[in-house]
Every structure is written in structure tokens, then in C-alpha cells.
Amino acid sequence: DIVMTQSPVSLPVTPGEPASISCRSSQSLLHGDGYNFLDWYLQKPGQSPQLLIYLGSNRASGVPDRFNGSGSGTDFTLKISRVEPEDVGVYYCMQPLQTPFTFGPGTKVEIK
Amino acid sequence: QVQLQESGPGLVKPSQTLSLTCTVSGDSISSGSYYWSWIRQPAGKALEWIGRIYASGSSNYNPSLGRRVSISVDTSKSQFSLNLSSVTAADTAVYYCARGRFPGVPRYYYYMDVWGKGTTVTVSS
Image 1 (cartoon, rainbow over the protein chains, first blue to last red):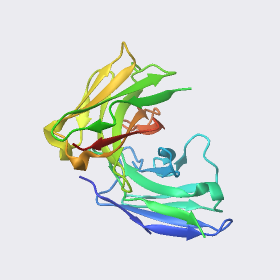
Image 2: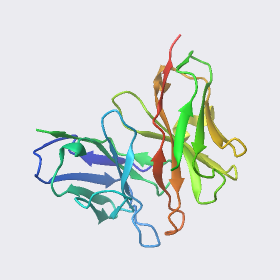
Image 3: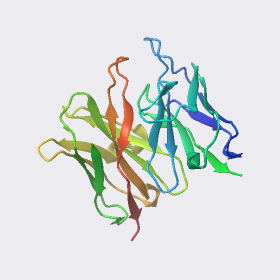
């Protein structure tokens, strides 16, 4: 199985300030077509996960442009340019390259 | 607007079979652009992918669940179902169903864009 790791585990942030989450995979997620099979999900408190970023850097429909995904191969980053209070929750990276699909352990973003 | 709704018993006894159904509304479960999946989350823990099924019936499962897991689809009812046999307390979790959507490129890539609200299943005698 592809193992996904994330850091930090917890991320206290001040509204209006930037935030960054790292995700690493045990194998390259770069597909032969040149795309990175890496998605980001946000699980807000008490809710089901919602898709934020797909293929490493594409924002899902309705996702604000303060969210940006980057990276390639085994190292990926999710950046929030200016954190809003509604951005709190747990962020998960996930690889849909190879079954079983696997999620990272999550990064909890909370407001200071 | 497509919606997914999980249903099933909230309490299952150890060694019995957990059976959940996900009802799809607002879109066709038979579309070749989708797969239908199950994901679970023990309290306070991370998400675990259980498996997926296409409308054709083709499926993939998480090997960590061994032969205990099966997913089926009933296109006439616009439903897909999860069966997990020989459950133990370790199977206690919130179970989500989700739709995987093929965006067109690249080949073989789907993202999970619609999720149900989740249903809590407790395994206890």
C-alpha cells in the first residue's frame, strides 16, 4: 500500500495569516500521463469530507482561490494564503493512484 | 443536485454482518462516468477507504478487510450496498458513501466529489 504522511499534526493559525500543510507519499504519485494523483479533502467539524484540490493543484468547484495545492512525485503542499474562520477542520491528503486508496493521518487546523 | 444518503442499522453484534445501503438521488447511478465507494472513520481517527464499485459491477476492495467485505449495486433502485461480515469492535466507525467522478483526463483518474453525511455503526453485544 502507498503510505501517506502529513505534517504538522495540528496547526493553530491566526485569521488573515497564511498556513501550509505538507503531505508525503511512500511512492511517486506521478502518473504516466504527467498528472500527480493527489487530492486534498477538508473535513469541517461535524461534517463529511469535501473535495478541495484534485490532481495536486486543481481547485474543486466552489473552492476559494486562497487555497492552493502544489508539489509533484512524493512531496505535496496545501497552502492557504489568508486563513478564514470557516477554514477550521481536518485536512487530509489522499492518493487515488493505486488501490487501496489511502489517506494521510490528517492535519487539524484551528484558530488561535 | 446529486445527493447520497446512507442507511442501515446503527448497532451490530460482534461476529454478525454489517449491512449498509447508499441511495443516490439527483443523478444516474448507471453513468459510466462514476464509481461508487465506501469510506469509514473510527471516532477521532483518519479516513479509511473500504472499496468501490462501478455500475457494471466491477469492484475493488481494501485488502486489509480481507474476504469480509463486499459491495454491490442495484441500478434499478439507484442504490449500492456494503456488507462487512464477522464484525468486531474495531469496525465501529462512521461509514460514508461517496461518488467518484471521472473528469475526462487523465485516464483512470476519478475524484470523490459528493459524499453522504455518514452513518454511525457501533459493534457491541
